[in-house]
Image 1 (spheres, rainbow, N blue to C red):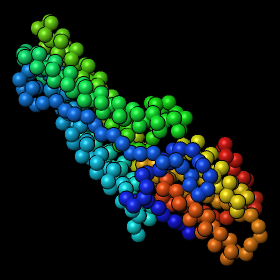
Image 2 (image 1 turned 90 degrees about the vertical axis):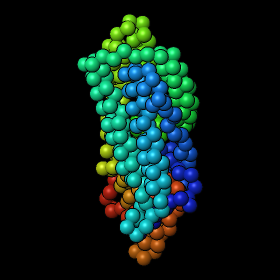
Image 3 (image 1 turned 45 degrees about the vertical axis):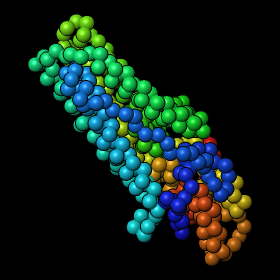
Image 4 (image 1 turned 30 degrees about the horizontal axis):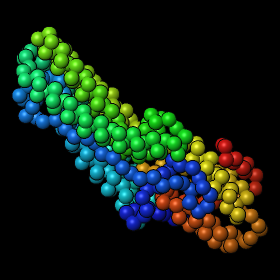
Length: 328
């Protein structure tokens, strides 16, 4: 008796991390926004010969590839359900976001650390420092603009979920928002590290600070990549929705006039801001089995009217099943 909902013809994705407002809609809609920022010029890296700039260039190339992966993630995860994917393709977002995180680790972190180590082994003094500073400054401005956009979206969603900003970015079911926020944060920190390394190189004449800056940028990117990889892994193997969403869903079911009790509830995240609902309910009245089946189907259809619900499966509670409270 499952009913499915989703796809490109649906409204803007509704958050599976919002507050229930009663039947039929369970959750509040939010927009999917944002994208990674700009990149540095390869020509400038060649001109200056700075290890820190090489690290930031590697990060930029990784960002460029990640943008493609994240665009694919967004597009493919919004495809409508089909017979072989009755609850939609939402989990594809985590697959492509996982590829993006792996790309950040290999193209960004590994290259940056390797180049920094090679620079320590075979020092090559940098030159044209002014050009390097100019590129870093311009890059910082563009990354800050992108970061501001991701912060604006994350903060709005965090307020709905009553979370602080960082908690929401880590916990959100939207891997695109998490990737953009994390990578923009790492980019801004990396630019500061690169500027410090380049400045120390100019002041001391030693390549060591510049090479260390490259290694630090790589280490930073590695940490970010590992966090993103782990979060996407957890989403792919299946995760229960936030306890606040669970409480709101129970309350929304109890608010339905035909529901007397809710004795079982499973809310699994199946895509960005999309959940699969499985519940056992006790319906009011003493109807025959055939009438109860029709009522259950009607209730499933009402639940699936929410764009945040990829599917709903309801069964009848046994008489001795304990009831769930909204705060459970």
